[in-house]
Length: 63
Image (spheres, rainbow, N blue to C red):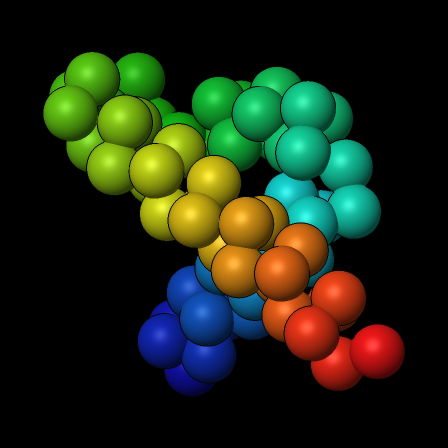
């Protein structure tokens, strides 16, 4: 059950990142624990950025 909620949270944040990339940064930072390292935050930001870029190009390829 915990894995379901983890995936649900990941997909929800990804969807919000596609719709509002600047707004999701505040949501992401508020959901992360205080002990999160800078490398982990950079990894999450990189994944979100790549998801937005892929979704952007897929949108125009499918037209």
